Image 1 (cartoon, rainbow, N blue to C red):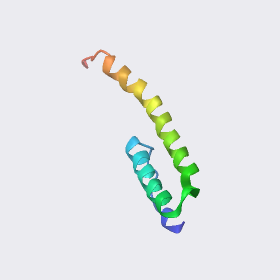
Image 2 (cartoon, helix red, strand yellow):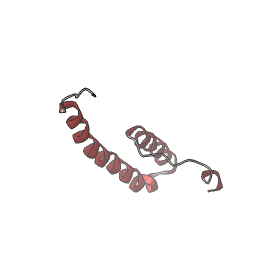
Image 3 (cartoon, helix red, strand yellow):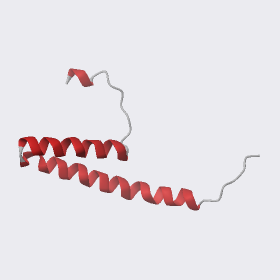
Length: 69
């Protein structure tokens, strides 16, 4: 755990969640199904993340562009 103490906190992104899923899939393949609940939790987090960010992206696309000044 000491190696994490100096790391800077970064926001969760879709890319980071996908990377976590890839790592967990590899661990589950290597060590068996004991990690499947964690994998499913991260997959659910990705689904919820996409649900939250998709409406915001759609709203940004539909919003009229306003010029400054």
